[in-house]
Image 1 (cartoon, rainbow, N blue to C red):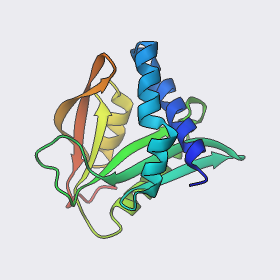
Image 2: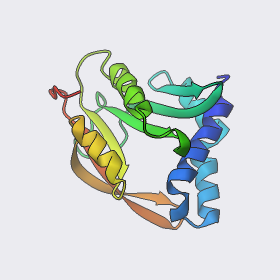
Image 3: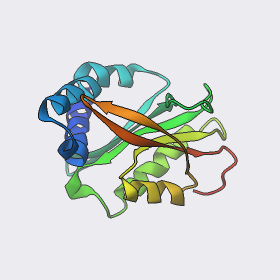
Image 4: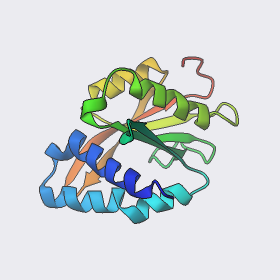
Length: 167
């Protein structure tokens, strides 16, 4: 729980760096409070079905990931499914393999009890992330509206079947 403040702040900052330009400032502020607030972060850390990773460089938090049971709105989701919920790095630390290494650790955790379907929600215009996940066996199986205040983004639902052999 000691990392809750760091994860909360890092989550809000990376979301803002990545998507902040899309939203009205009031909507963004409200979403940051709700989605990345300290209470939410503490609840995620306390949830035994979820795991979080914090990446540091020279004592500075530069990236993180969150994974757990899938709660994406798709009829194929079952209680056995796992989801990569968040994987973000500060802009200055993107590239260079950080994301790939963290992604591999998250997949190892998600598959620790054996093969299962894995899911990811990704913004429809985040083409780099879509290509990355496709290279790792994920494909688009649906869409939904991701609401941030008055804005509803088009979000793709990606799935990697349990039988996938790509890593």
